[in-house]
Amino acid sequence: MNTENIDKYIENQIEKKINKLLEVLPNNNYNKNIQKNIYNMSIKDIYKNTLQTAIDIINDVSELYSNEFYSKNYNREHYIKKFIDIIMKNDRKLYVGIILILFSFIIYFIDGASV
Image 1 (cartoon, rainbow, N blue to C red):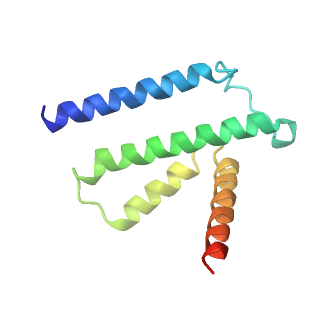
Image 2 (image 1 turned 30 degrees about the horizontal axis):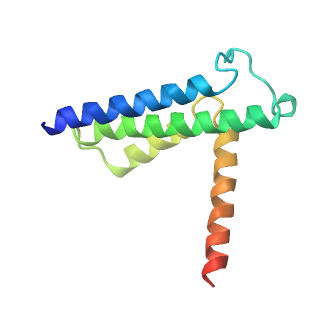
């Protein structure tokens, strides 16, 4: 097998596992056209939207680097601008903030445990 077939196999396996996970999650047919305010959302909705936002950001960043990183010679500012555009896309600001707060707690506890 060459590396292209291995990459396709890995990609298909990951896609199958993600689709299986999305089938297991309740309310899979969530209507994205209806935007809720944060104070009208349940903790479950915030949790699911935060996870979905993290997955979307990872997919967008990997797509950015796979499509543009090797094919064109862009400078660092280009990638910083594209990354900020990915983070600020749609209604991701709230969920990115939640993710950053969780990361800060994790780093705080790791730093406290190392002392």
